[in-house]
Length: 300
Image (cartoon, rainbow, N blue to C red; front, side):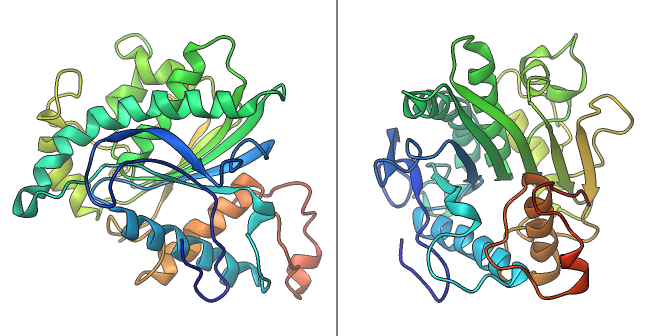
């Protein structure tokens, strides 16, 4: 990944075989010790219809936002060298038929989640475990939950997934709502060590218009015109006490990572910084900052 300004070259895990579209790869890290050299990592996972270059730019904008917000002015990786980008082929080189790739991308998110869980477990050796936090967007949130599911299903896994930040999550609410009717992802979610944040927006046109039919046609078990976790306030009451819904009123589907939406992306970066306990590289010279104990993450 090319460096731009103060942005770091992020360590990465990729399941891509091609820069645009392509098949699902076995999974590899760059550099090879991107995961194995760290006892705690924060995975950044992009969503649907993101090719390799767009994924790089997306993650770079998010790290740039962290740097601007936290007044981090130094060379090298941000956040204590914990951030690891995850690239996966949720796109296709199909021209005008690209939207149809969504139906293929949903099962890919399921399959890659299992592959990512195994890659993380392999990288944890010979340590007792690796602690993992995740920031994911759109269909990347489904991939994150499928990773959690695979970890939860393996009683010998050395992976401890602690916290997740969902942004515009393209995940049907029913998959997390009722532990009796839909135990698959709900049971896995309950295994999170700390919990999750759900950054959502009722103004998200992609999740309100495209997601319900796209999910329906993605295959059995995906529901009939379901509501997305990232589109409406979820949970409504106390069904999932460790999932906190945070409304991003007026935000569109692409507002969270950075770029043309500075207010939304600054807020999502702030939530990530506080919730995940990312350390400041340089303390901001303000009275408010001086009063904060950085060893104990605060909550919004």
